Image 1 (cartoon, helix red, strand yellow):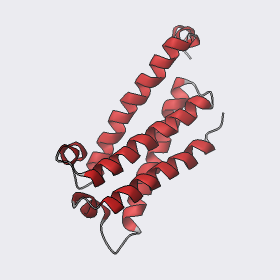
Image 2 (cartoon, helix red, strand yellow):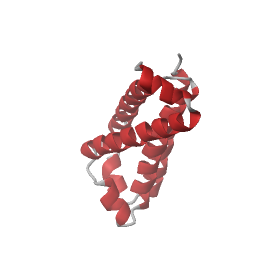
Image 3 (cartoon, helix red, strand yellow):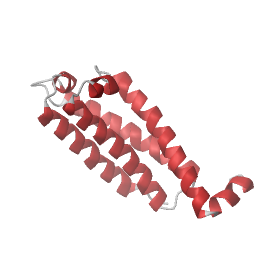
Length: 140
């Protein structure tokens, strides 16, 4: 790693700011990708008061942050955290697509648009649960 960056990250206060900043930036990027694969616009629907989409989006936020939390707890460098976080996001995205595919009786996105809160809760719990599995597999 770059010696200047390593010196900065030796300071716990600066390291906290760096890890939080990287996580927030990744969160914005990853949520934008989720927006591309869903049939709805998260923030537009949340602004309208759609609780189901708020729950599903909250699960995505928690899931992404949870993976980053595990990378930091594992002592990963900032670069390793970003790599693991990206890898975890890809798995979360695949899990979402698999969830959509494995429920042939109804379409997840359509039910979320209709504010089906039961679907919103299960989508949130699946994302959070998968994020814990991903997080526990992170080793240094």
